[in-house]
Length: 337
Image (cartoon, rainbow, N blue to C red; front, side):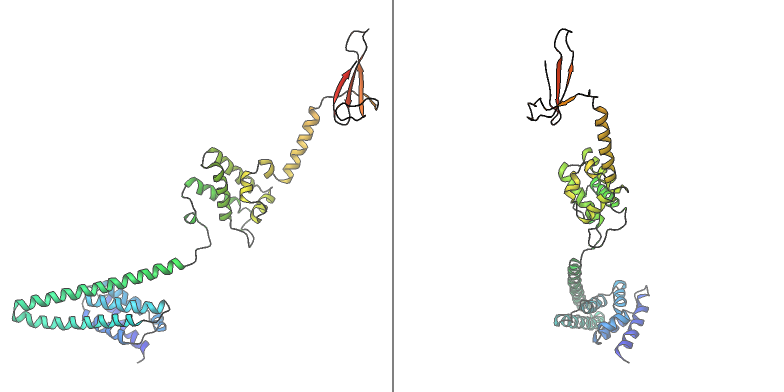
């Protein structure tokens, strides 16, 4: 029978013992664990048979200190295979120590049975030895658990961080700021996920919110209005250029945080505003009386001779007419009689 078949046989027996709630068969379990300790078990056998899980279940349900100590020692030595390092000499020493402790304890139990029949003092001494042995085994198991915990903690700290950015990885715990970051990130997802090589919507939303918060230093109404205006403009389906420029990096978060509504507007809206402004200017201009162009009059402001003049009777009929002059170059106006 090869090692793998032997491990399967032992696993089957240990599995039956773990299902027994009365805790019987601890001596047989101890013998089976010692057999596992003597076998040359490698990582391949551990993976196929999953004997480690069975031994761990036995450790949890067992009430015998010897079984618990030996199971811990086996699990500790097998964990070195999973970590990629061969079991060291210290591990073999620990296993041999636990084995010798368990054998000495079993012999002390037998001597305890004999001395109990002869006298009470011998029984008291044996009970003290048993207490010391059990405390020593438990201490060894606790030390092994602590080392395993430290190793697992170190491996977790070396694990690469997740790519997705969540509120746990954020540098703030303010509920208002986290909600604003979520709104900004959702506004950047209107066109789907950003192209490859660009930052994620969560990262961009965090940068933009951070830039807005740096300006106001709190989450008052001005901060909220600024965030709302950024969200509305980034979500606008008629303004894809602003969203694309921010995602690609053409517009930085610091720049977008301070842009006015006119600067964030789409090209169509900018042309519409320019047209309205020109129409308003034309409507507001006063109708001018058509005058006579001349180069005889010189503008006192721009010194050019391109003027238009009108002559109106502003005083009594026997008084000379008043001449109103406007420079066609700079718009300067003056009058004389």
